[in-house]
Length: 200
Image (cartoon, rainbow, N blue to C red; front, side, top):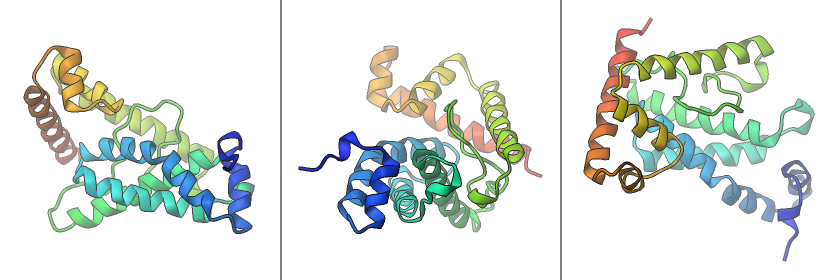
């Protein structure tokens, strides 16, 4: 029985660097939900959820492997960025042949307390100014996309990004799961159309 639950991530990672391999498994399980949340947001822009979850888990593993406490960044913030970068890179590589304009866009998300930035950029090279700009871009993208959605679609989107499944959203809204599935597909189409229209 370990005391992992009672220790900070940063303390656990110190043990990991000293050879405690159990820390890696523990943190991978602890942040699996975060990976799934990120994959859901990216699914709306491009990619398939299961594949994106796999990529996100790779990003999470890289975060465990590469985290450096002297960067003045918490592990969870670093992990979010590594997960986003890995997923974004996978979508970017996949869509190069499909001519989908993802190269200049950030993940669609509602998170208010995370550092959101272009996943293809070097995390450690970010200045405070560029981080703030990227956060504002994410909020702007989210708000602009919402203007293209019906009231129902906005409600579906917000519940979906909070992690609810189709059946759960349908139950909450009093609609069949198929209706929610159709709404998600319409949302995806409108997002793609918006990105096409606003590509640089």
